[in-house]
Image 1 (tube, rainbow, N blue to C red):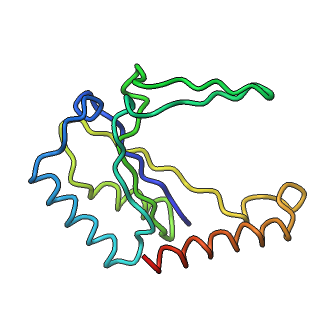
Image 2 (cartoon, rainbow, N blue to C red):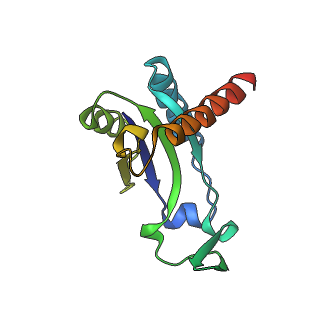
Length: 143
């Protein structure tokens, strides 16, 4: 099962304040633990929402809104994608992240092709999705 661990933004991260050298070192050690355990699939931090946009879809119409966005508590500052055996294991890994000061992580399960019935995701379309993922993994391995 794949899970995304989402790091909620803070006033500091939205202001573009970089984390301390100590936190960066702790995050590096945490990331190494995830990698050594073989559960880490992806990770990254996100720039403040002031550098982002939102795109709203309404029929054929697309509306692009530049950041920053208000409601800091609804914004994200980073993420990990991990592959583990259960939601409890994902929570265990998320609980080990080296945060304090009110930082909040959200853990969400990532959809798998097997989560969809065949009338929504036919086998041939699921195979195409699997091929795309295999291509992504091959590209990542080249880098």
